[in-house]
Image (cartoon, rainbow, N blue to C red):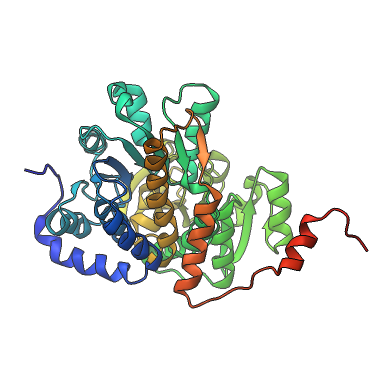
Length: 422
């Protein structure tokens, strides 16, 4: 009997419909699945995945299983699970899922250990919680693990720190660093889905609001671009002078957090760091300020400060909590400070995740191909091989009916020659 833990298997029919809806907009992954089903490159391989349990992730899991893998899945965030999707993966596709939307911290880690009980050969992370638990409490599993993959910026930061401190015990491919992932997923996916989550949970009009984006990486760029397009007056907070300069040249206001605190209507963090919406902002912000997070963990908003300095907390609507501060100001926290795009909405559109999860599938194939050839990776964090990245871009262009030119032989010779000049 397959082990699993989902909210209600009776939700499976709705989940299957939504999985199929997403699949229709994931042509690259669908192409990979077709190849996997014929070639079975992952036959006999056990994969433990800790990812957001969404319709798009479901299509990745189905692709991996078609490739011959024995797959187990748990949630990488307590609020991101789509219960009907989890039910369908169990009932319709025979995939072991351990995820319930809103699960408490104890259940969250119980589910992580449940997927690790499969004794995986490959780990797939979104935030590096699998790797963290393995390295701290499940080192007995290391001997079975060939390598892992990591989906998001926060996880890559954690893993590079482990590598630098020489405590990383097996190699990781940073899927997040693939150009077909972070250029598109982070910029277009996070940009659209974050605003979707904010508007679904609050029903506010963005036009005319002062929208403060903390962090101008690829996710911050995407959010700022979309908020500006909706008519918001966008302000950027940055610590990196190059990114701050880029934000200003892109047409956004740039200032310190204490200045923005006095005028901002909405604050959104996308940094991967701790307490970036903290005391300098929360002690000064206006009445009825909205704060939200699209970084991976719920550490970006200083919830401890809010709890300590508020006289009451209440839920005013789904995914909106009102903190009444001691001075009477009201601050609204969305999605408990967790990822607002997944907690209050459905996350990235399928067409964006198509490329991200194509990278996951092909990286898993690459890991096993190296193993079968007798090669191995060092205990380091690697980027996705460039040929995989380019292949995914080509498949995506083809699915869109787009053809591009190639260099002529004369052009290739010119570019490779140092003798040609004016």
